[in-house]
Amino acid sequence: MVHRFPAVEGGLGIEYRALPLVQSILLASHLRDGRSPIPFFLVSGLAGVLGCGLYHFLPVVGPDHVFGESFRTLAKHVVPAALTIPLHQTPRNGIPSLHFTWALLIFWNVLPSHRTGRILAAGFVLLTGLATIGLGEHYLVDLIVAVPFAFGVQSLCLGRRRNAAISGLIALAWMFYLRLGIQYLEPVPAISWLASGITVFTPVILNRITNRSLSRLVGPSPALSTSPLRESPLH
Image (cartoon, rainbow, N blue to C red; front, top):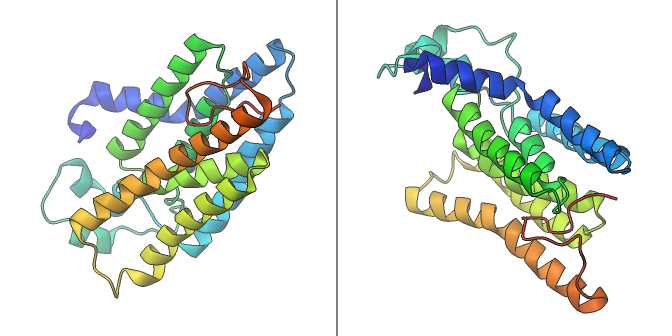
């Protein structure tokens, strides 16, 4: 893990804590372009409220908080550490990863015309994913579930109710399985990876279908791009 490379760990730690700064930069760009910052406040706030609600349904703690030094040193025997580290003051804010959710929302809400901004935002999404996993703040499944969750919130704010409903059901299916079903149906690696792929790519497919339908109705729009949410900038 990155704990063996202090420089990498430090850089990812800075990136992990930079989320409010990047959100502020996006809001500043909206104001510079004469756009209202309220829609982005709305979608980010809604994601936070819904995410915190899901944390109560499925309380999860990242591996660094559970396994401590055993996680940092890649020791083989991590169960004793998990049994001895007190977690009463550790927030159960694992799934879906709101850090990754907000990073996706930042990327989706950069105007398509701002090519440099979109490239930087995409890099921020990638680094956020690496930081959440590498620092032990989240498990991979937390990020996987965050994709349909973020897409569902964004779609809801855009009035795309069908997309929001389908994405929300996918995210909830994961939550219910991990909370209630995993004890009855043990994960199979091949099926788990297939389900993960479907989870990540379904929002992309839904968005393409929606945008194709909109293009037939209203014609090409300068606001459309090839991003996961082509109409994503909230007006």
